[in-house]
Image (cartoon, rainbow, N blue to C red; front, side, top):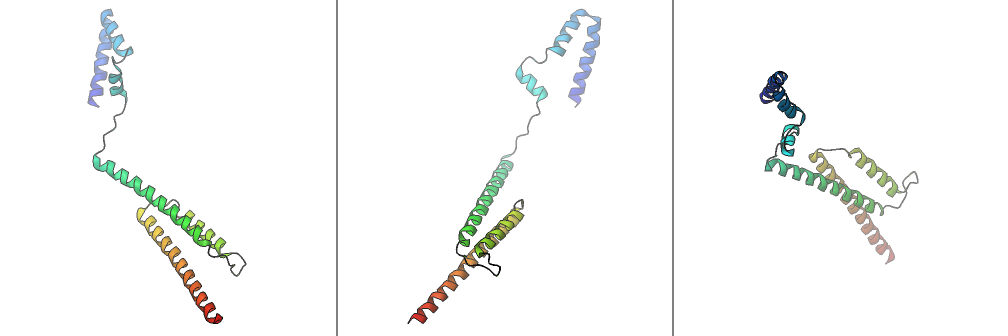
Length: 157
């Protein structure tokens, strides 16, 4: 700031001296109107310099970007797994709507509710909870099918 103020003072002094002398007027005019001699000088004067980040800050940004990308990938994989798992629920509920449609609507609604969540801890908790729910539902379905098979085998003897 002081350097800029000093520069303006110098220009002011030069300008007043230029009024008194034609020779001085020509040099001041060049200084004021022709600008810097090189492109580097121009850029140094007018472009805000970006502070270089330390390696730690750059690494943290990369890790954050990877984390976001990986959680996004995990969320999409979970959503696809839910859609695949709903294929095994073709029977209708009390209203006559197939369970697969009900499950898909609920999954979509929950994913939309959590869509703009940015806290990595919350996102991770939601992903783990969703993965556990899908696995538990498929395990229960498999257990019921095993019981039905055993029952059918017992009745067929």
